[in-house]
Length: 154
Image 1 (cartoon, rainbow, N blue to C red):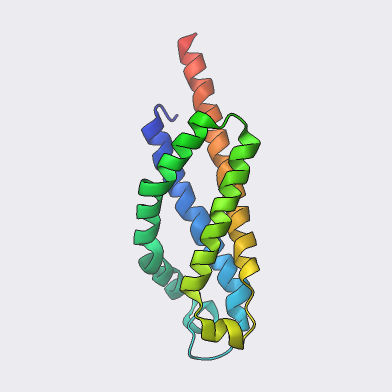
Image 2 (image 1 turned 180 degrees about the vertical axis):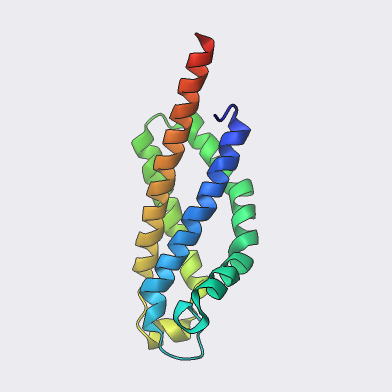
């Protein structure tokens, strides 16, 4: 029972963080498992729980700042000026895919990328799918809010 836009964006923020961390773990599972040296601490070397905690501590402040400063205004502008949900979904997919490049560059230095033949496109696709999931969830939350507002009006 989300009453206003602030509550919707708070719920979407939690969903965004969950989707982002899931994409990080999937990326680590796919690309990080190629790295077989003790120089790199991933899920395999470090352990799952400790790795997830290091992701939260390493990326948490980026996520909160990114969501509040960038994604909320973009989401608001898209919802206001882009009428077609499919176009908003496409824009989210492109944006999240581009963000996947940034995350890939943060997680893996060029030594590992070249030495273990890591693929940047994997990150782009994983985060583009995360953008698709976020767009679908956002659309469902806003539709539910519109239906609740219509029910209150009648």
